[in-house]
Length: 421
Image 1 (tube, rainbow, N blue to C red):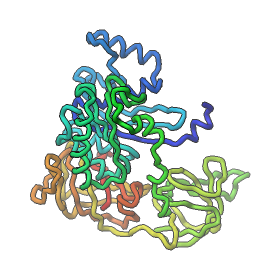
Image 2 (image 1 turned 180 degrees about the vertical axis):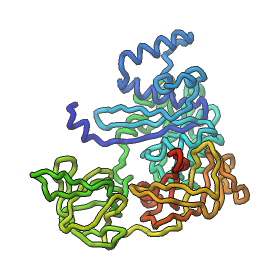
Image 3 (image 1 turned 60 degrees about the vertical axis):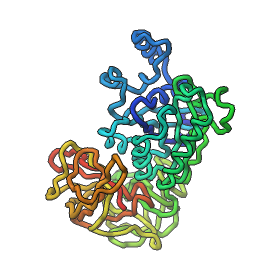
Image 4 (image 1 turned 90 degrees about the vertical axis):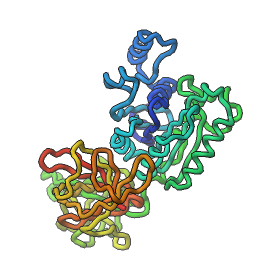
């Protein structure tokens, strides 16, 4: 595979979620191992550790459990990112912890995912953690869920066990806001239906996990209907060759922009026309998410970082009062009287909390409207007010222009991640 074809390959991001010991790390290790995506020295290292543990097989979970505490306890604590590629697609995996106290880690790992792998232990069936992780995946608007019923080898690859789990999950999933849910019976330990098709599940007519990941359509996951271009910086070379050159660089957060189209710059409200679009050093005729490009406009107008370029007949919402679903990430509790710095696309404003509407009871996945104290890992809905208007879409409409983070102005720590509702 040459460098150009590799760079142009489609990228799929997926996250794993499941209860402790459901086999998330083993599954990822199996994907890497069976797709020949690990180095020889990595294989030798985990083989030695497996032998030292007295195991009769290679412990593939060691490929992702990178922290010393994780290896010793046999659990995942931090979000572990792994990168690999097959001839069809590039992948980024976010292996997230299963414990309730690491909810914030799952939110972080899943925030940019196209797909969530929900692991279920075939012996235990659908449990509380399954509901919790599926709810978070739905809340984060992950477009595709793949429910992997793992450890099928421990229930003799019984079709009825698999079908019963599918039935229970589908009944619950009717309450979720997810477009696409698929079910696959697997054994991460033995490799059944992970990369290679299993002879133990002749009753299963679907695809293997790898085939599903390689062929799943994700092109429509991005919003191509609502043009949004967040200006990150202004490019002025100040060279003899490009004496009067001025372009606006940033990421396409939605829609399609074409050379020659009329656009609107917000918040100024000034109209202009796209003169040229550059993707790196190459001039192109159109740009779409998630491309990072620079644009030149026919008329010189005052544009700065934080401005957004849109179309006249398709504009974002504008308001200083915003309602947001937050996940509180910081160790310190939320201070309702505190002042916070809010980062939204390429814009930054100060913000205060007006009201905690409710928080989610993560044990029952229900709203709690009486308990308004917010601590680490809490997911809650709140009304905030900003010092100047935000130009935004709802998170459901656009994950890029509908998301934000709160930052501590003193320590620069990220305090919360938010989804505009």
